[in-house]
Image 1 (cartoon, rainbow, N blue to C red):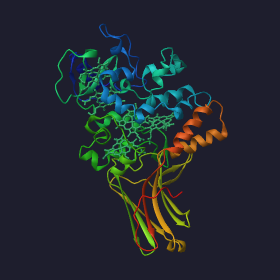
Image 2: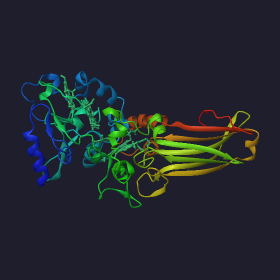
Image 3: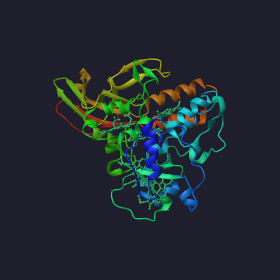
Image 4: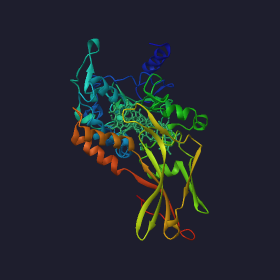
Length: 393
Ligand code: HEC
Ligand code: HEC
Ligand code: HEC
Ligand code: HEC
Ligand code: HEC
């Protein structure tokens, strides 16, 4: 154990039972994977206090529960994940690697690693808890002790669950790093780490200005974690302009407010399209992409047009002759789950052994229907009729 960890442990032990203060965490021990079983319930805990079920936390922490249940973290063990976690489609070691991020508690693990690295079924698996994904306890509870940020107002004992340990940097980006950043030796495509959100943020102006992940994704400490699936969140962070000059429409997309690339990861794809509507019929004219397109087996990159924080990209769309009589539309359409949608299509066609096709079918439909029109602007032959048109596809 490194000396800094020892020092942190000492701090933890000396923390008093209620509102104990711990200094800044490295989070090495907090995010040790798999998270060790909580172990025996402290004497004096009633049934609700000893439960790891988010519904039970929600009996007292109603506002956090109401936000969390609508977040992607609560969906982290959805059909797209669960449909894959079967041998031989994925081996036990890989399954456990997936769960490190998607359902990290020891009580949520399907396998345990025993002697000589051999994996066996986890006798302590709570399947219901597994289905709840990244839970309150996954982030806050270790050995039945609660860890949280320094409270904004003083709280007076006695408190339920023997109070909590207040961690100075609980809301820092380091907290989010283990699941939103690959390590240097992990999978790269064309030299780039497949998951690199923390480093993208670290190298941006936001980290220099002290705007953390939580600063944007947990405003006022709310448990929202809105991102690419939420059009309002994307509109807040991405500025789009479409200007017509003669018969060319120039569309400029600026990453004005995301603390990392837009999009940050391989999963989403953003389509920028032009279309003509004539006699009630809409026809696609041209299509460009913002995103990182990689092969399904992650073997190679096809293109990478993600926009770094603060930067812009522009596309020119030519109006075809038909547009003079009809309506010309440019639109920006977001597919938050594009990569997985392609991947699930492949599974449904190839039917690899072990994959749960009923679950993958559900995941395919979910990832198909999550797309939305972020921006749209239309011109008639003469002048502008700026209105929100439906998707031109
Ligand atoms: C280092 C953390 C990490 C690991 C390990 C990990 N994931 Fe994920 N996964 C994520 C994050 C973060 C997202 C969300 C990305 C986004 O929204 O752009 C995600 C998204 C997904 C999605 C799409 C969303 C959904 O629920 O349908 C699926 C499916 C998925 N992961 C499956 C897996 C599988 C299978 C494994 C193991 C082979 C795995 N993940 C390993 C972090 C991880
Ligand atoms: C992904 C990890 C994560 C999950 C899941 C999570 N939290 Fe939190 N929670 C945090 C972080 C980080 C903070 C501190 C945010 C900050 O300081 O800006 C926090 C803060 C809190 C606070 C203090 C709020 C305040 O206003 O001072 C409470 C209470 C809390 N969480 C309870 C819960 C409950 C209950 C759940 C489940 C319904 C939950 N959390 C789920 C990460 C998480
Ligand atoms: C019987 C009611 C009750 C239950 C059940 C309960 N809590 Fe609490 N919890 C409290 C109270 C009261 C406080 C102190 C004041 C506050 O932060 O709301 C607290 C404080 C906390 C804090 C510290 C907040 C901070 O400011 O840093 C965290 C984190 C937390 N609880 C997480 C949880 C989690 C996770 C669960 C479920 C596994 C849970 N609690 C279940 C009542 C409860
Ligand atoms: C234990 C791992 C873990 C930690 C810690 C974690 N996340 Fe996540 N996060 C995930 C996974 C897994 C997903 C993908 C869930 C899915 O869609 O199935 C995700 C998804 C997200 C999304 C995507 C929303 C969208 O619309 O696609 C955002 C935003 C996010 N996390 C922010 C944060 C922030 C901010 C923190 C730190 C306060 C954090 N996460 C900590 C695992 C984690
Ligand atoms: C300055 C505000 C800001 C900061 C700081 C920030 N984000 Fe985001 N984040 C956004 C916005 C806006 C979006 C929606 C647009 C997008 O997808 O890039 C987003 C989207 C996401 C997504 C959705 C998936 C995707 O592919 O884009 C994830 C995951 C995420 N953020 C995680 C994080 C993590 C982890 C950190 C810290 C390392 C962080 N964010 C820092 C504003 C921010």
